[in-house]
Structures are given as structure tokens and as C-alpha cells.
Image (cartoon, rainbow, N blue to C red; front, side, top):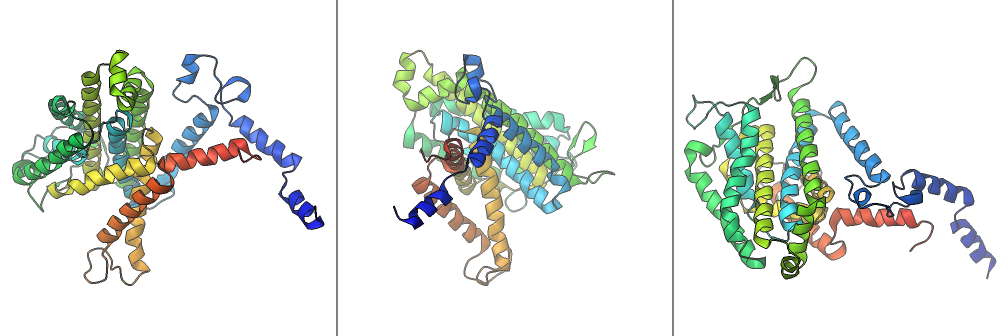
Length: 400
């Protein structure tokens, strides 16, 4: 071996101190298993715990704490953007439960999101304007925004549960077109094409979520509200996924005939997945209505359904954290597409004429490139990227 090769090997070899330091951190974050082994458990309950390793517990608590401090760090427009991302994440969790966990491909998610948004708008709207309104408080219209899509989903689910694969995708695709027609024609509920309904001054327990207060402004309060709703929905989704219902969903997805042989009721669990997904989509619609303070019928189209599919594909199918990461990633990356107009001449600012590509076209191209890129190089999405980083960290200094 030449002198230079020996020197290179010496430089690349980890020192005892660095290994000990890295081992110490790995032990700290290693987990709650036996002898700091995160994948080794002594009971079924420990394995199925909500946060079954110390690393998950530290990282989740840390991320929530950092997210709660964002209103003191960012401007209002960024907080509104992140609030919308949280609302999309709620819808993406619902889609991941039916498509990722239960294996039922649904392209009709935008219909249920729109149903939730217009339910919230109708129940909270004023009775004095030209559209239907009941002027009810948020504590009523927010649960109702989940209940109405869930009921509609329960009515459609028995038909959808008889189908699978492309046939189910086509049927749910029809829901989007049917919903677009209903939303456009029922102008006494939706406000009509191009007009829509204005937002409501949402209040909960007497606290306005949109008006500026003595301590916090509206953007800060609506951001915190969206964050709390996302945490509650994520916990609910995670609990569904790790319990008997979630395991039945996965059995139906992996091999439905085998699942039926071992006692899983196929129709019951397919309907249940459809109902839960529709309810989550309705909550997402109500959140979007609260945050954007304007809802228009044409917003709930096929492109929105494709966006939700892209969120779970890019974030990671069959993972709650992946759905959240995908929704936030896509919402933020599309905002960056709008910011490109400041630096590139052939992309005009939003609403301005001219240019080779507008920001909507750039966003569509980005969607396509990201979906193709992740499907080719990392089908598990952002969650798969995290698994690669984690495995490298756990295996270091060895490559395998």
C-alpha cells in the first residue's frame, strides 16, 4: 500500500472520540427498546405504542414546539401559507387512510373537500345576504363540516366498495365532475361561479380567529388553530392506523381474498375507510374556508384531487407523517414557484399578462416533475428519504 493511500485511509477512518460521541447521541435518541435497541421490544403494547421510540418522542415534541413558535418568527403571509399547508395536510391524511392504508384509489377527494367548505360556509353564513345561511357558531359548523361529507361518503361507499383499481378510480373521478356541476349550479349555497361566498369571522369560545386582538393578530391565531386541528387529526389518523381497524385496512390493501379468509369484513372496512376519509376531507375544506376567508365553486376541481394524490405520493404512501410532510412541502414549493417571477424574466408576476409561462403553468410543471422524480428515484417519498438518513445514522461508520 502506498504512503498516500495509507494517509487517505487514516483521514477517512473515524476517530474513537467521534464514534463515542455519535454513539452517545444514538443512545440518547436510540429508543425505548431493550438495552437502547430501538427495534427490540419486550411486549406487544410497547411495540404498538403511539410514540414507540425515544427518538420519535423527542422529534415529535420538538417539531410541535418549534411549529408553535413560528408566529413569533415569521410574517403574516408566511403564517397564512403554513396554515393552508396544515389544512391540506388534514385532507392528505384522510386520503392516505383510504388510498395508502386501505388500497382504495380515490380521485374524488376534491368533491368532499368542497362539500366540507360549503357546509361550513352555509351554516356559518349570515341570513341577511343572498345566499343561504344559518349564522351558527363554529363549535357547530366545524363538526358538521366533517359530518356531512361523512354521510355522503357513507351513501356512495357501498357502490364504491364493489369496485377496485381503475374502475374505482373512474367512479371517484366522476364524483369530481358531478360535484363541479352541483357547486356551479347551486348558487344559493355556493354563491355561483366566479363569485363564491365570503369568509366568516370565525370565533371559538368567544375568541375571534381572524380579527386582530390586543396580544396577537388574526394570522397568528388562525395559524395556531390550524396547527391544533392538524395535531388532533394526525393523532386520530395515527391511532386508526395502528389499531385493529388500521391493520384490517392494510390486510384488505395487500390481499383482500386472504384478508376475508382470516375474518376481515371487506365491505365493512372499505366503507369505513371511505367514511373516515370523507370526514377528514370535510374538515380540511372547513379549515381552508376559515383561513382563506373566501370559497369559490371552481376551486374544487380535478386539479385539487391531483394535488392531494401528489401530496401523499411525494410525502410517502401509508404514513401519517409522510402525508403531513408532502402537504407542507408541496404548498411551500409552489409558493417558491410564484417567487421565481422576481428573478426570471419569462415568468410574469401572478395576475400579470405576458411572459412565456405563468405561475400556474410553472406550478403544474413542478407537480409533474416532482411526481416523476419521486416515483423513479424514491417511491417511498420524503418518508423514504428520512428512512435512508436514519439508517445511515444508525449504521455509521459502516455503510451497511
